[in-house]
Image 1 (cartoon, rainbow, N blue to C red):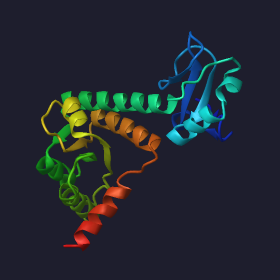
Image 2 (image 1 turned 180 degrees about the vertical axis):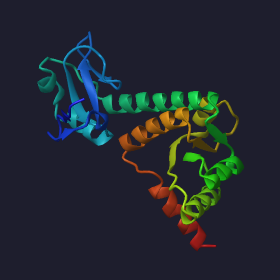
Image 3 (image 1 turned 180 degrees about the horizontal axis):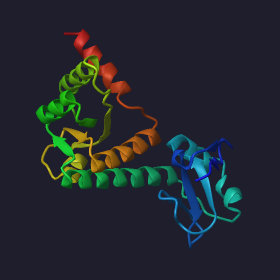
Length: 211
């Protein structure tokens, strides 16, 4: 697809870096994450801050050329949709055998280079994060991949999506289903203004320095 222009920044960007919005049948602004809903659409940079700006500045009516109503919680709605999409992809990855569960299996997947990404529950302890972060650094030191880590979901959300109990650590494996789930993790993390493991790595190093 050709580049699209963000209605907030007026910058032309690739469609995968934006979120499309359309006017729904009731005249309200609707997020079109798949980019295939009918009707005139407009595009916003794919992070929460830009969508909140578009809402605050009432940019949708002009872009859609229609008297639309904009839900004040549009940013939260998009977050929820992205999270549901990511959790659904996690479930499909589990069914395809593309997920490793538990700190021991995650560490093994990391050290073998089979992991595409690591997932930590929000409740994960600094000690558990530190051990897996050490395995990730060791893998890079030995010439392996730099495996990103994300902290996006609660233990309850991960457990439900992955069909386990008390899921605190998981790894997406480098298979088709695992990579599809990773793509959605990246989108959600970007939307929330984060970046792979920056904060987690800092915390893990700080914990090591205090030992």
